[in-house]
Length: 401
Image 1 (spheres, rainbow, N blue to C red):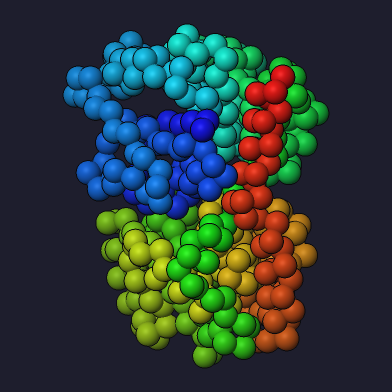
Image 2 (image 1 turned 30 degrees about the horizontal axis):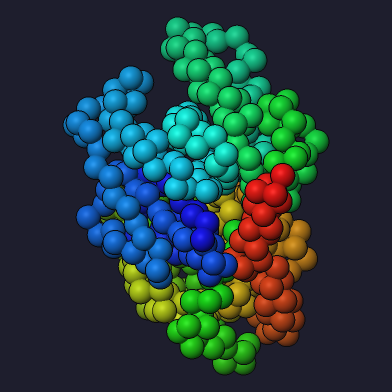
């Protein structure tokens, strides 16, 4: 049995239901011996999840800052473990093309030159192009000079890693087409490139006998799930939209941990709009996945107002349960809304446009039902088993070369 190992240093329990845990889980379903290696340890990490072992490695001198040579020193136990066990690892999966991924790959190949390296890009091509362009610009300040020097060192390792890796996946079609056309900073990686969108965990639904509700069984609920109050999620814009919408017989459920500073914002919001206190529900961070899915299952609309996203897991959960997605323009929004034909994409900061489309959907049940049917159809394209089978096939080709 071949062994698939995913190294993800900042592993948290909440990530186990995301790509960090789903790739090893679904590779195990396909017959691989799967393992996750965690390094910056969290107290609530289990020893295994759905038959996938979680190997926990303690840092060396954890009190040292994460800077240059000190950062390298802290990771010595991890590098030693990779090198020592490399021959027993057929495929090593890493997240992101970074300097850290380079060193993990270096010690892996040192111990197993025939082993395969799979890098999940978690990648937004326009953002990457901006980073590359910044490297070409002449710094205007001393601070800018040192920042550029740091990034040049980072990219030097990235380009070495690009040549070392065997498979590189990107999540969105736009990123896939961009890399195919322009390469990774000019480096041709077409023979290593895979389009692997994130997926929905269908096996969990089947194993837990969760039945997707019909449109008629759903309630008039707008749902969102995120880290509420962070800059990236732009939750204040979400609440501003809701404050200007006539909710009528609709309610809003906002699941997720709430930033401490944002709790004050919520209190002030309800003082300004007291009539919404009974309309907006904050259930907090929903750790129980079955409970979380029950919120999606009850809702008709999923709203997101983020300033930026990768290929967000919440989009795929919303798709599966037939939630019509209304989102600001972020990475992957074209994919999960069928370019706006099924869901709706709103330009960043367009308050008037966001309010208008929400009110239109709240008052047009026939349109919502039509979009519900199309949404669950689109969800069939975004299942973990599809993406992981594609990876498994590519790995099979690599081992047969």
